[in-house]
Length: 186
Image 1 (cartoon, helix red, strand yellow):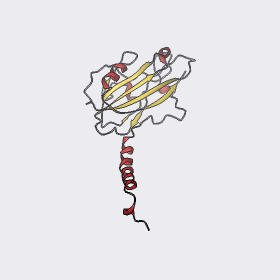
Image 2: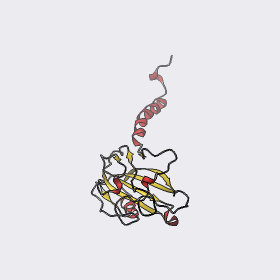
Image 3: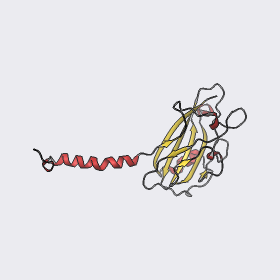
Image 4: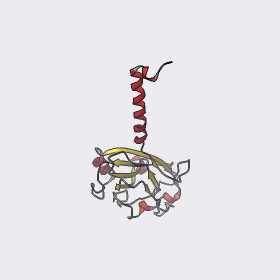
């Protein structure tokens, strides 16, 4: 009978490494979710803009995420439509300085100034959520919602940054990111 202590030292080292690595890998998963969105991945009209002829209620989607990796001090959220403006892209939501202890945003809060953190500048020049409003008859637009776990304090960045400015300022401070894609058409 072979005893465990008589196994090849290399094989024992691999077994130990696997036991040590598996918990580390489980901790690295960082996932953004939109609760309540059906499997067809379409936003409802509630998320669409409430501007004339858009037919929506401008209700930002509920978001939740698990804790960022060690060293996370804040989060940033961006919602971008790469299909908008004839392929030039449209920024619907830029928000950052969200405390590391926060792991969810209720539906509708992004369109109000009550959301903790700092508002960045969207396509309308405002600092809150602005819902989708693709042209009638256009194919479904894709809305990429991204969250970044940052090693920046919540008050490290100035208010009003555009998406491009935010991405430039955080490029060396992103610990992890996650994204979801939803679609919307009229």
